[in-house]
Image (tube, helix red, strand yellow):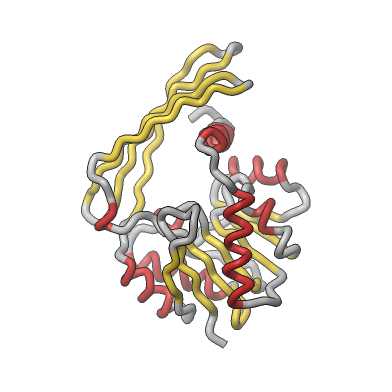
Length: 238
């Protein structure tokens, strides 16, 4: 992709889809309060451009993020300059402190390589939780709910110009491989073509629950609206 362009396209696509970051953050806060009423700090893993974190801080004022992409971090820092976004990998990071809440949204957990990698990621999240702290993870699709050869399309028209997005997803073993192509048009630059590729690991509900248990954060699976893929909500053992 063009330097610095992916974060902008990411935000424009999801704004067009009507993603309700504020409503999702409120729902997550409610789930946390049911399990830990006094929670005051949050770490948002794979924080992206900061859209969930900007609302989570209303309920958990001691807020921080972790993100692997420098481009996403730069956008998040412009959006919420008062919040620290650390650069790091969700499978292997150490911030030297713990939080009452750790979140991992938008199916980012799917970017692990395999089940051993899933266990590593959840162990890293668990290490950053206070005893009794709450971890909330939005999973990628389960193997039995993946639609083979899934095709998705978007057309965005806004003040910046237009973006079309096409994605085609196929199953390869225990993962989904998603090929994405964009046409981006602006009055200044005309039209250009971009491509992207994602590999997202597939795990059953039972595998997720087993990995949470191994990380000493036994979890339950819930399906609140608007999370179509559901949420895993775990509590760190005291």
